[in-house]
Image (cartoon, rainbow over all chains, first blue to last red; front, side, top):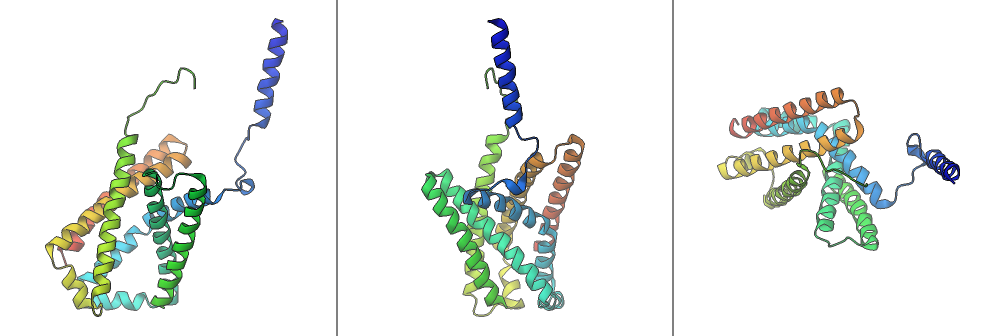
Length: 139
Length: 115
């Protein structure tokens, strides 16, 4: 009896250990849409943090004098900086929309699975549509 | 989970709340500033600096930026805690992020009141 239960326990442990992933195969994990929104919230947040010094520098140049203001608007007219601005704009709008969604979920406004799925579609769509329309307007 | 002993510094709930309060502060400020800028007949250097010449707007801008820096600290710290395992590297990144954000706060005051 004793040996039988021991055998069971060891095979059970082996089964658990075998099933357990040794590492996360990121390319094999298929995230549901709310999961994609969540990881994009992180990526956009990190991106915004990393560009903070540049954004502060832009605020400083826009306010300091008419000379620096003109230098800034000239610098932002090149295609490279327009693409950069567009990426930052998307990061901001996605972080903004996804953040509003999390606040709504905290208030139990969209906590069911169906509403969570539909609201994450809205986050993705609204932030991309706003990025595109503001992008066209800025160009 | 049997016999789970809860330990830690107990800053979780406080930071969770601050993350949401700072988010609401930033949303309100940004809605205001975007609305104000769009209401200007044309946005140029004069109307832009006239806007920021008021001490009220400067103060609310600084409040927005401080909320942003605290928000950024909690967010970056959570990301680092999730993905950076070695304690030494984690500590170095944390210290650098805190120092950067403190410098940004000082820089923000200089930008807003030094113009």
